[in-house]
Amino acid sequence: MKVTSVIILLVFTIAVTPTLLHAQSFTIDTLNNSIDVSGNFNGGEIHLPAVKSRPDFPGGKKAWQDFLLSNINIRIPVANKAIPGTYKVMIRFIVGSDGKLWGIGSDSNCGYGMELEVMRCINKSVAWIPAETNRGKKVSFTLRTIVIFTVALNDVVISIL
Image (cartoon, rainbow, N blue to C red; front, side):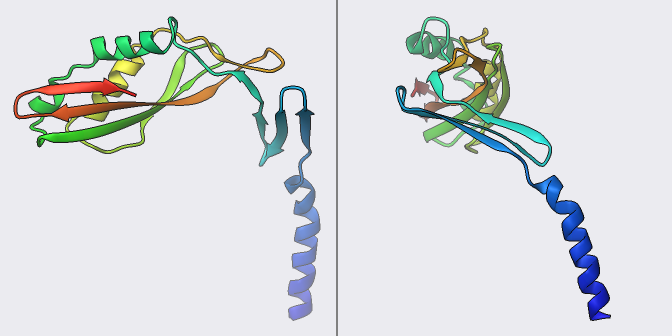
């Protein structure tokens, strides 16, 4: 019985091992101090390029902060009866290689509708200038935005990091 189990395990291992092994390639660019990594994992292609430039909102960081400040409804926490205090809302999103935003989600859980409001606002954003590799290829890139809500009795102030 043990011998049969060992033989079955060996046959299975030999049959499955080639599908688990995948080629990976590394490109080291000493001039730019970067490494490009490519490979396959469980049938999905993975490419982690060295990024020369991060994504940028048209007009830069100040324009992004102004966009958020002018579009976030700061009355949401008060309308949802938030307890006075300071709330740090962290939202992540992906700027696609085409500049469009997707994968918008929350990394915090302050509640009172604050995460939903910031995500709603980010979803309204125009297309960004996408990230670019050292080789000039436009790639998707994950960013995070932090919005701090300071809630007083009937007043809310926000700041963008």
